[in-house]
Structures are given as C-alpha cells and as structure tokens.
Amino acid sequence: MKISGLLLFLLCPFPLLSEAVDPFRTFTLAGLAAAAQYHLYCRFRECCSEDWIPLDVKGLQEDLDNRLFGQHIASEVILKAIRGFLRNPEPAKPLVFSLHGSSGTGKNFISRIIAENLYKKGLNSNHVHQFLPKLNFPDLAHIDKYKQELQAIIQESVKACPRSLFIFDEMDKMHPEIINVIKPFLDYNDLVENVSYRKAMFIFLSNAGGEQITEFLLNVWKNGKKREEVQMIDLESTLTAEVYNKENSGFWRSNLIDNNLIDYFVPFLPLEYKHIKLCAKATLKARGFRTDEDTASQIADEMIYFPKKERLFSVKGCKTVSAKVDYFGEPK
Image (cartoon, rainbow, N blue to C red; front, top):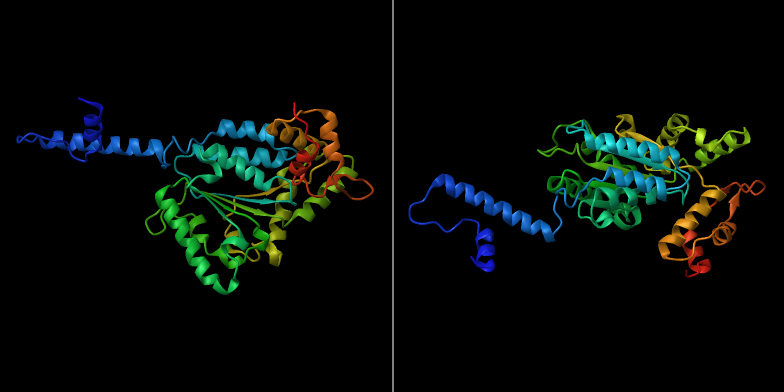
C-alpha cells in the first residue's frame, strides 16, 4: 500500500469493508483509526498528554538547585509538595500555593520554572493560565463580568485538561471578590458541575507580607543566626495573619483562608549581596557572556541595599540584574 493510501486509511473514521461486515472487526478498526488520528494530531498540536505535559519533577529539582538563589524554604516546600501531589493518583483537592515576599525575590521566576518543567511549552502552554489585575480585571465597575469570565475559563480549561495550572500575579492588587469566586474549584469536592478539579494547581503571587519577612530575617541576622536556619514554621502563621487582615493583600477576610483551602503560604526571603552575584553569574552564562568574579561583583555593587548602615538586603532583589548584565557583560 502506498504511503498516501495508508494515511487515508488511518485518517478515515471507518475502514473500507467488503459487503460481508464483521461488527467486532469494524469496531476494532474504527478504534484503531481514531487512536491513529489522535496520535497524529497530537504530534503537531498541543494535547493533554504525557508528550506535552511531562511533569518532570527531576528537572524541577535541578532547576531549583541551580537557578533559584537564596530561597531554601521555597525550594524545599514547593518541590516536596509538587512531588507528593503528582504521585497521588486521587488527590483530595487541587494543590494551592500562595507565594509571598518583596519584589525581585523569585516568585515569578519559580512559577516559570514550575511551568517549564511540568509543561513542554512552559508558560506558553494552552494548559497554563496567567492572570494580572491590571490586564484581566482592570475596571472594578465590571467585577461581576470578570467573575463570570474567570469561572468560565477555569471550568473550560480543566474540562479540557485536568492537569491545568493557574497563576494569579500581583494578588496584593486583586479585588478579594475575584478570588473568592473560585472557592468551589479549590475545595474538597469530587465534582463541580460534573468536572473534577482535584488534579489542577493554583499559584498566587503577592508582595504582601514582604515587610514582615524582611523584619524577621533582619532580627535573625542581628541575633547572629544564619538565614538557612529559618524554617517554614517560623513564618507561615505570620504570613497567614498578615494577608488575611490586610485590605490590599487580595485575601482580606477571604473564605479561601477561612476554609483552609490554601495549602502552603510560602515566604520568599530578601536577597543578600552573595545571592545577587549568583544571579549575575547565571544571567551572564545564559546570555553567552564571560562569567567571572569581577564582572559579577561589578553588577552586584551597582545594586541598592538596605538598611543603609548594614547594606544587607537588595532593594530590588535580582529584578534589575538582567539590565546590568546588558551593560557590564563582555563576550567570551
């Protein structure tokens, strides 16, 4: 059979049969043809399949170890939580993170790392959805419309692919009603309108709590302790109370917290000079520039640090390192 004929056979929903039809054989061949159609389609178009959603936990661990700096709590908690969640064939509810810390500490970056390792197309995957208040919910006069649209997006996305990921950025600028409306999807429900959401993941990003995290870490330093000694338990209750009671946190009096639907409140610590150097080296390497101590130190020296006397933490974290690399980077 010629190749064109074979393709025609595979793509045809029912095989060409003689007048004496065997029903069982017809059913079997039709099923094979349908499977072939699906396989051929998914070779070129993104599907909800292992080829497109590899769920590469090993790769996630390597990236957290080699690309995220100064965030031992976030790395450990997020890796263990995702690994356990993906191992569970029947999770009780979706996995929900709330990431907190000052700008430039790595909240968006770790979200990208997660997407890149769990989905072949990363943040560009059809199964990864990002929301920004100013972009997706700009006018509070239309809040009822936004709530309906958000619900519809989540419903249709999970219906198409149970392993969907939803990232809500700038939660401290999000109206609480926007988030409260998704409570049914995060709860301990087997089905919501005949759809299971228990294999989906939700990540909330917020600067709320950043001041409390910084103050805590500053006291740790003053007491002569190492930042690596700080554990999740030291900050989680403080973060929960802060975002629940703060009006511009996105979770003010939120029923998501009342009903314990957020699994992990993850603190992102302010970054020190040594972490900025590591960010600089990683960015220089990624850009193909010469990676050396002098250039990394030049970049780190250009950053602003606080408190003024101690110059301990970077004001902008690693956020402006990329621009500094453009300026100081030298070709190999």
